[in-house]
Length: 225
Length: 243
Image 1 (cartoon, rainbow over the protein chains, first blue to last red):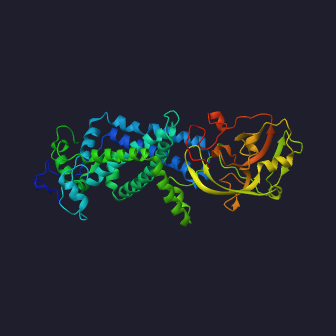
Image 2: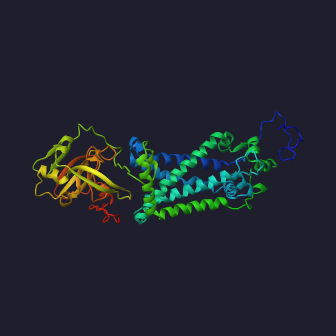
Image 3: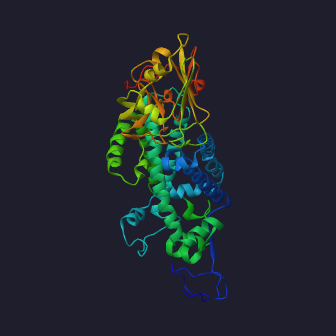
């Protein structure tokens, strides 16, 4: 798309201020520092939890790592710290606004999920696409379920758990871990294929060209400002 | 930056699918916890089916079924089978130092029992072979003043103890064979205890010493509050099926 002064942009709105070919591509502000801190901290904690968890649970790894008492201690501490970055982020208006975006589905979101040509279509995609909205809900639920069942596993006698509940907590904790690992594999794969998205989470700003392709409606409303 | 002034940021329109998916999945997790018993049995049978055909060992990643391997020291101790010695001492007339060959020369006993851990998991129909503890004690000629038998592990940390009458039961083995193969390092080999009617913690792994003593000496897990008489289904506040 050429950027000559006075020409209409993709949305038909005249671009202002006028841009020349010498200007660097514009960046759109996407994630606040608090949000980026929360994402990075949570990612580190999750990786520690998965590494220590599998060192306790998966025997071939346990045999190599050993050291059960300290591995368990690290796992428990990381588990208790897991919700903290999110709670800190909830104090910020930007994060709460983004949660609102992730929560709401417009009719185009269902279309987006259904269609194989979703990225070539003219569906309206705002700040997050439908896949990201669903993934966020799943990640959030996995975190809550793992934290809750983790507490049950840590204090079975103090909570006077029945045998059945204790077994249930164990099975659900393990099964949710596997589901989370699968979800994270997809998350990492998409991140590898979308370096502009990785940059947006790393720096807080997103390349405007990329945003116009992937989040057209969001980019348009951002560029109105 | 999307904010309160930007129309695109107002999340007032659209169905709250995110919240519904989130709450629905959390509710599913809670239901899974409540359905503990049947759910665990379901995963156990799934795991058994997969593990039977699995050559990779990756079925260890499937939850709910099979063995869990605990150690209270820094790792899983290993000892060379040829160098292994079991020491029988204390209130006995004939202290013994038994090699694996010596153990195999004593009268053999086999058992098939479920193995039940006090944390809840259970492995059905495990085949064990070895020597009855009572036969080992008979060879060492126990002194009449003896009241209990202590077990020590070559991990340097774990100990357990049985009363003399518990020790003389026919279902208490000094086991060197499990599922027709030598007890593996994972499972506490080359020689471990198998106290069949009690929870797994009563069975000392990586056995180094059998020491006959005047009275019961509380073992590793008893110091954390677990019952001395760890009968399956009748102790530790649990109601499991006896093994």
